[in-house]
Length: 480
Image 1 (cartoon, rainbow, N blue to C red):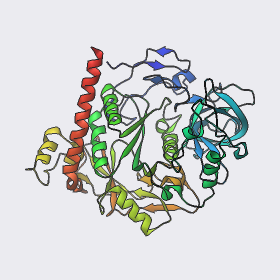
Image 2 (image 1 turned 90 degrees about the vertical axis):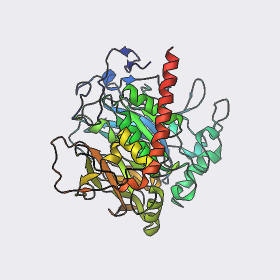
Image 3 (image 1 turned 90 degrees about the horizontal axis):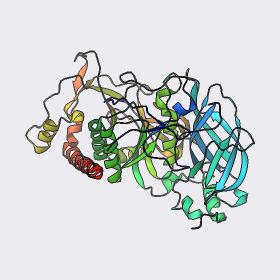
Image 4 (image 1 turned 60 degrees about the vertical axis):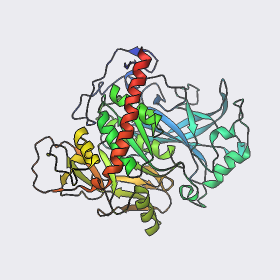
């Protein structure tokens, strides 16, 4: 049933085939493409066709100077803007661009054009491309909510890209409610006025209304044909047991098993899966574009999730002093209302170590763990060392309080919010990985804390595995 088809920027199929990999480490798996790839190679995509305007990487110019991925209405500041997430060469090839707005309809109708500003949100890190924003002003006086935007290098209309603007939930007012059923803009002053006025700092919207999700976990691009569905499902099962109720996965290239696992998570209403069709070597773009993925998830869920977590497949955020991540993070906000983000300190659980005897081996849950080789529960020996803040730590954030995220800390806060560090007795980031050099058990401890949640974790794993197996049966039946 499953096959790969790579699409070039021109939409032509390419015979390239992926290498299936069990790890998400660029050093352990073969990567694709040359560092000086053509635009077609950079933007190739495997999978079903992406509808026009939906999130995917598109070029701004014909010289590979900049690429854009998504557009988000930004109402956390005094002047309403659309913030476009992208990447651009370093040094920046140009900073002034043209933002062209459109209403919905078939075909879409040009609305108006404004000058926008492109800038890097990352400091130089020896890569040829850095994460970038394009800030496109919105004219509130026009009383029309734009449906989509394109970014051009010059005033001449080229339209190398077309991005439907994402409006995160705000008082149950969405972009669709600002357009009539015929697709034409209503020109409803209320739509733009509410969003525009809400950004004047009167209150923090992530505090001021009930969000769709409590805790959303954002995972950077799955790449190099990643095909370890067991690792993925274990991470999801442990995370949901600890309070995560939504997941966002970006997909560069995956194998058939992980593809079915993501389909199962979508069937359960747990996952949002977004294409990530940018293929560059690490010397050109850091870790498959991890920084722009963080910004996209931040703005995508600005008003829809109370907290966001940013972590890899082999990492789990574990609350220790509270029953769930939600109660732990709410506690920190109560204790320090200025907290805008919360750093979880990292400790390594090496999968090279032999497994330890479980705390209770005679229960049905323990027998399930042993029979199915659940790594995240069997491997309880970890390094004694807990890394300091900003060294391998990963953040949880209150999205309305952060302007630009990062991998191990926060790049920029809104207003006067600040970074809070989660005490190691309150929570830790469990990082499961292979050491690769037969590590000594010196300076290690047995940490079986997750076994306190073993019953719930096993129930979640059984639910996910059942849906995964049903997904396999469904896809196989469709082949017949």
